[in-house]
Amino acid sequence: MADTATGGAVVGGLQHLRTYGQIAWLWIRAAWQYPTSFVLLAIGNGLITGLDFVGLWIMFAHLDDLKGFTLHEVALLYGSASLALAIADTAIGSVERIGTYIRTGRLDQMMTKPVPLLVQVCADQFTLRRLGRLTQASIVFGWACTYVDWTPLRVVVAVSMLISGGLVFFGLFVGFSCIQFWTTDATEFANAFTYGGATVTQYPLNIFPREVLVGLTFVIPVAFVNWYPCLYLLGRSDPSGMPYALQFASPVAGVLTMAAALLVWRSGVRHYTSTGS
Image 1 (cartoon, rainbow, N blue to C red):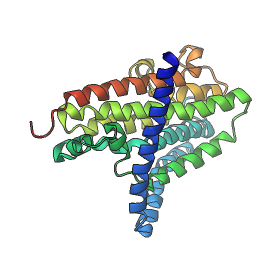
Image 2 (image 1 turned 180 degrees about the vertical axis):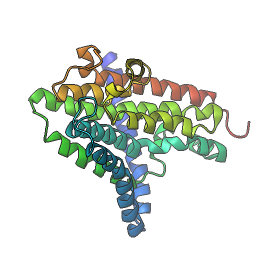
Image 3 (image 1 turned 30 degrees about the vertical axis):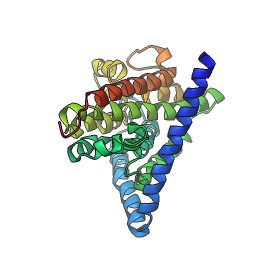
């Protein structure tokens, strides 16, 4: 029975991914009808997000290190956090518009279709212009990786870090966007934890008080996006004295954050009573 249930869940999950891909492909084809605009938006997005790292580069022109971390080490933190955010933002960033969908009645239309609501919301208005952010983050991360003393285990940790970081941001995007089921307009509040969380993790977390690090570990778990696994990649112990085992706990944090977000989503959908009520 358990094997049958597991097999059914896997098949269902693959079907949802296929449906998501089909919806996303429709939006990509629509956007590509205007290729010049598409390319310019992607380039502009990459240049604008790239200014963040230029700011870091300028800062290090006047510093030897930031709380003991060199430019290359901070670049690893910056690149991994930005890459995880870019993956999640590209894949499901449209979930931020849930409040707009509620106000305009579009969510009601989606609920009448034989496709899971979350799949539709995440794939709706899918755009590849965010590839600019993804490309810029990949370049910085790739450059920083050349300064890592690689071993097989560090390769595994690096790959799991990017996947787990994407799951953490997936959870934050979905979970905090669900607040709009109750308030209908809390986009900026949600952004404080998604984009704000990514900005915080672009820097060594030991520049903040230890209480902040504890909060970013056990309350809003963005420290698992890159801080703990990057400490292992760099061969460093935690300057704040947190347990060494946390450097390998990113996959657990990613799965738990995503699971919690899905529960919040289910609660929000059950609470929703349509714009006509």
